[in-house]
Length: 189
Ligand SMILES: Cc1cc2nc3c(=O)[nH]c(=O)nc-3n(C[C@H](O)[C@H](O)[C@H](O)COP(=O)(O)O)c2cc1C
Image (tube, protein in one colour):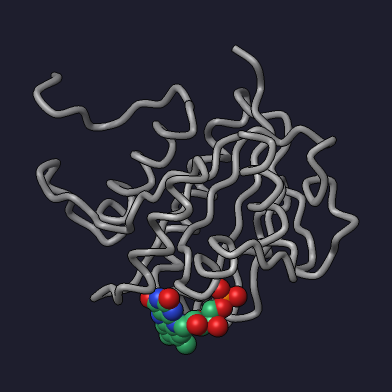
């Protein structure tokens, strides 16, 4: 299996726990990974502080962190050949910027690159309810080849902790990204 080059963008939607659980899982999958580039918006850091009460993203030193305006990051260009981008959680603001090609920060530029290069974009969108603007933006990103994977947890695996609840979404994201991983599978022992 080809090792993956993955971009993870964290934005200021509610659900920093999804990013935290994804970071934890990516560390476990490191033998399938060549590089992980992380970019966080300002509001992603503020929401992480508010919801998780810490700045523990600083502890994931195995990953390469890039400033939100760093257009010198490798994945600001298609030539760097990052194969997958996961936006988790993905705010409606970031979704809208991507849908309309407004590449004014590293997150929206990297997504623009992934779509133009016909690589894999997974947007773990989070808001409720959705306006028609949100729905149209999700439609546009889907038509451009992106995957909308809403932050909708499932409960049929009987998760017991908040991390396990978040893990039901992260596990689907990792499947979509093409990782080999152990996960709860319905009707499999
Ligand atoms: C505690 C908190 C929770 C938020 N939750 C959401 C949310 O679930 N979805 C959303 O689209 N925006 C949410 N927002 C608003 C975004 O953070 C805001 O629109 C921001 O401009 C998004 O920019 P970004 O995508 O660059 O992080 C939230 C803001 C705060 C402070």
